[in-house]
Image (cartoon, rainbow, N blue to C red; front, side, top):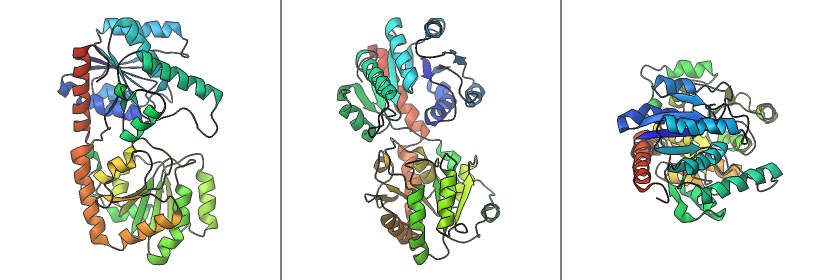
Length: 383
C-alpha cells in the first residue's frame, strides 16, 4: 500500500511523534510510507527520526493555505509516488489533503487530534473562520474522520459532523520505551533532582500553561504533607507560566518539597523514580498520551475526568479518575493511595497490563492498517 501522511510540519508535538512511531512499523505492515509536510517549524526536528526509519520526507514549502504553487507540488507528489491513500493530520494539512484527494481521486482519511478551534469562552474571528473551513471540507471532501477518543467523537458530533463520518481509533505508544531502564540508579537520579532517596514521590509531566492544573496541585500539596509528611512533588515540563508557578510555590513555602525539573528528554528514567503520577489538568484533552506512558511505566494514575482520561484509566483498577476538580479532592486521592503502597503497586501493575493490551503502538498500527484497507478497497467514504 502506497500511503502518504500529510502534516502541517514535523515540529515536536503529539501528531508528529505519532508519525515517527508509525514510520518505524510501516514496512513490517506492508505499507510504503511517504511523509509530506506543508512547512518547516522549529527546524522540523522529527524529520530525522522518519529518515532514520527509511521514510522519505517532502517539504512542500507552503507560505499559507492560498499558496497555489505549493498545492500543485502536493498534487505532483501524489502522481509521481502513485499514492493510493492520503492520511492527513492537523488543521491545515487536513484542508489541503481533503481537497487534493478530491481533485486526484485518491481516498482521504484525516485524524482529529484535538478540537483546536475555537475557544468557546473568547473565540477569535480567525479561529471561527478556520473552524468553518475545516468543518466544510470534512463534510464535503474525502472519507472519514478518525477521532482519537470517544470523548472527541462526541464533540465532533456536537459540532455538526455526522456520526457516520467518524471512526474512533485510539492512539498507541511504544510501551517498551517506558520500562524501567536496566541498571538505573534511581537514588542518584533523585539526588540530582534534589529529592531524598526513599521518600514518596508524586510526579506530574505537562506544559506549564493555563489549564494544566499545576496551581491546583500546589494548592493540594499542604494537605498531602499533613498526612504524608515526607512526600515530595516533581514537576517536569516548561512553559509560559513557569515563573508564575515558581512564585506560587515560594509563597506557599513549598520550594523544598516541590521540584521543578524543566524540560527533560529522559522521561522513562524520571518515571522510574516516582511512586505516583498525577495529571491535574481539568481542560479537555482528547487522549493524553502522558497518562499511557505513566501506566506503561507501572505508575498508578490520579487524574480528573476530562476528555479521554476515563477511556485510558480504569477507575479503581489502574488509578483514580476524579469528578471533583478541586485541591481537596486531589489531596484526598493522593494521600489515600500513598498510604496504601500495596494497592498503589497493584494499580501500577494493572495499568501496565492495560496499556499493553489496549494502547500499544502495535495495536494502533494494526487498527489503522485495517481502516486503510477498507478505504482503498471501497474507494473512500464512510468506514
